[in-house]
Length: 129
Image 1 (cartoon, rainbow, N blue to C red):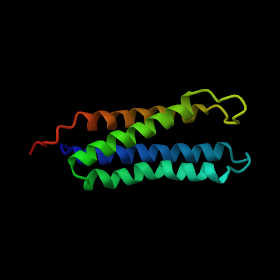
Image 2: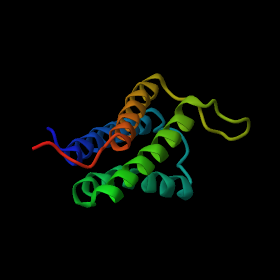
Image 3: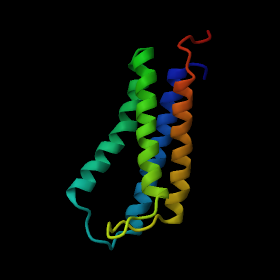
């Protein structure tokens, strides 16, 4: 797999599957908890759409837009994931601390998005045949 577009697309698939499975586990863990407010569900939908869209964007966008989109999307997801997982809950905010299994997935997701950022950052735009 020598094509950077292909590599980035596969990395986004890998990150997305980790996000989804971690969310499924989190839903099972808090099944008895009260329902989430609509704004939280909408925010989650927007965040999940980013890696879904990036799978296609990596294949279709031209070099400069592709590189920039990967750096921006990877940075957003790395920051949000890091904040939600590794920053202790704020007093009165009501967010429970992360479960150990979620921290495991969050670490993998963070590494994946950092690799995506690095691949895009160091992408020269010329691919080997």
